[in-house]
Length: 151
Image (tube, rainbow, N blue to C red; front, side):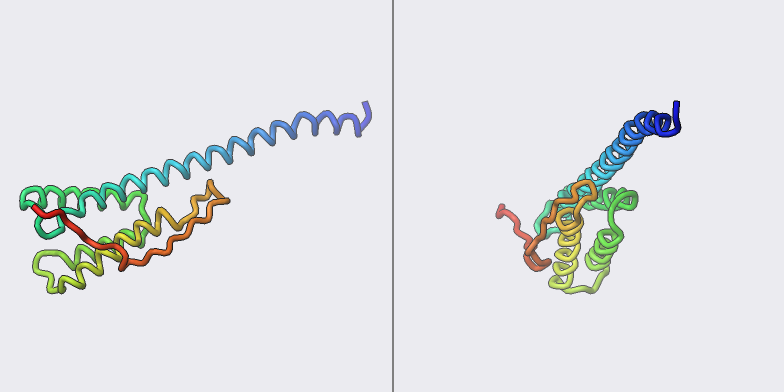
């Protein structure tokens, strides 16, 4: 057996194995990215659902439960969510905390900035496993408005 023949045999055996390994690594990476994205999305859904506890007109007992749920979800955000989302949530909480001297407009502005950051994290960011995705939002923080049904 000559050197070129031996080289062909080795390359013929190694190249398919290398291709399989690279494919497996890329697939594992994309699965982890998707799991991460789903975890963040679930946290953000929980935060948005529990925001109602901060709205005027919410029943006092349910408002406290919703606020507790919001704080629980925010603590869980420390595991997976963006730094900016946590920062905006903290600013919002500073504005609506008992004893805060912020006007209603400042509170709503902090809420808008927080919700806009959640949307930006999920909507504008291209997950690495979808390189062809290029979604862009045209909304601004001011586009988030608070409505409540009349009783």
